[in-house]
Length: 169
Length: 195
Image 1 (cartoon, rainbow over the protein chains, first blue to last red):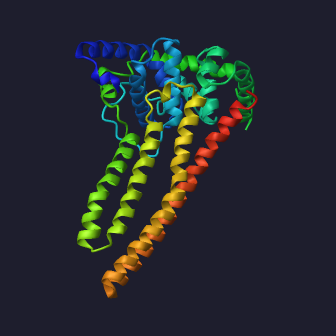
Image 2 (image 1 turned 180 degrees about the vertical axis):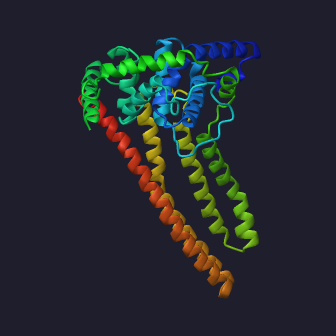
Image 3 (image 1 turned 30 degrees about the vertical axis):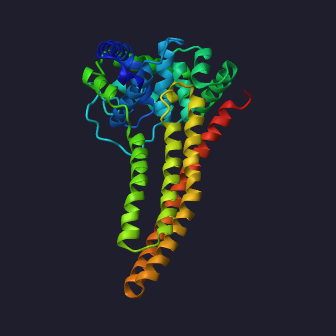
């Protein structure tokens, strides 16, 4: 909210910085939104909502943690918390020429398989496995989720078992 | 394929996803600018509308109940107090949900905060619904006293049917919300067990 009262010059600088950050981390944000959505419209809505929340916290983010960790935290929090009862017709849409929910090439089938497996998990487990797949350390995962490193490894072991059982069904 | 399934396979699939995404523009300037201008989301807007309606009901109630319908001033005072309590409860929930740093917390902490705000909202209905039923009863009694006869009967039965339908809908939504948030709290407890 404080952002509004900044002078125009500072605002432009902040906006440019924000736009650049988003451009650098767009695929990270998209991946989180994709794993918590059922269709392209929902990804669009979630992406917009994540950007709104990132912008709200952008000024107060003081690089005390790695920017990627912060982006994961905000994106996952938004995706887990968002009230999705009403779907809105997005006024501005993502600019992508692929549709991971509908395209049928071999790569997309693989991605779809990943999506199906992850979406069967509970939201917190989904977040943990997603962070693990993004090659984050147990310590970083623990910081983002809010649990100990030991608990992350226990949890991942259980998730692995759960996923194995799912694939055997 | 299924028998060899492991998290490592998923890592491969994740790499495929990343490769696909890296070839895409995904987000344009217009999309980013729109997000920067869109600070008040739909949920927050709903709370503001409820608060505005609650406050509007105070002067409107005076005109509608006292001036137009001839109901007692005491009825209007109690209605106004009820409206102020509603506005206060909505404001309390909004303040919790609209914390600009909410999403910066870790997932467990943020979820606990949202769950507690939503649980308060759901618990509020345990007071709100009986209060509305009592208010409606009082309203019908006053209308019946003043108008009596056919008009009074019509308002009475209309009010009863509307009140019952409203109470059933409100309670079913409330129970569903309570269940959803209890589920989240259970998940958090499961996740943090042994911490």
